[in-house]
Length: 407
Image (cartoon, rainbow, N blue to C red):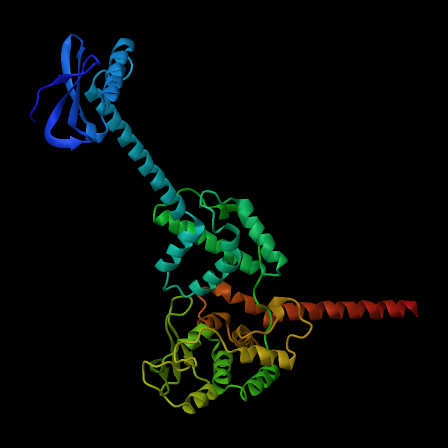
């Protein structure tokens, strides 16, 4: 850079002109300041006039540095000033970065977002569709926008109140609790939440008996099957299969032709609800039913949906026929209402009435523990019947004795 240093009217401020580059009508000027720090002279450059530097601005910087030396506060040199500015900018950038991370974390820990991740990682889960429905209807609208650490027991109690007011069953409310707990467990696994979930004390003391108690008599079952058949042969066959094997709808809907063995009259039930495959025996009615069907390829569904895929739910025909037959007329307790699942319960109840032992029934139904089958023991409990007959005999005897005394 050519040119000599030129002193300005401001003591300690000088500049040197660029030999060719213009800034306005004058040649561009490069400003510097000269001062002493602890007896040592400092010469530090500021910048070009084209970058915004002026004599007045340079003098102000020099005055600030000298004032700092006098007070002992703030940067005493231009390098110190620049270092302080850089540190300040770095600190500000770090603060902004941390704030952004905090905001991203807050977004990531909002229940809606965590549930979305949960669904993506549990796409194989058979009950996911039901969980999504309950979340969409009850959980999301109430607390979906809250962070996991913002949700408290009161929030869940409000959901419970909303569901109770809407007439939802206690079992559905417990299912909602389980979904929320599963979301928190998932958040803990992926390390975005620590601590106990708010479900820890939700419904803790509530004991529920939400098991369906209704089962069909043979006459009711026959009437139901006969009424369904004109509407849908496939729906009739599905109902017949459940009544004769105790199979769940999901087990029937996932049956492939390779699972049907006509030679030994067996049906292989793979990947059932309890995770343990089992076989069902074909009664004469079921054997005849399968014999009358056109057998498909080994990997084809036995009971496909209209679009050819796996059925998600039983046909509405069943519900309509149940209503037409009046099987639920006057019944308000949902446990006593007839639904498709009643067919499975009816099968179990008929087996009990036929004197089949509970462990055998447990195998047929695919119950993992005998405790799940005990619920059917009351259907034909001889000990209870005998006890009540004894009580009846005693009461009749007392009535006779009292009538004799009165004579």
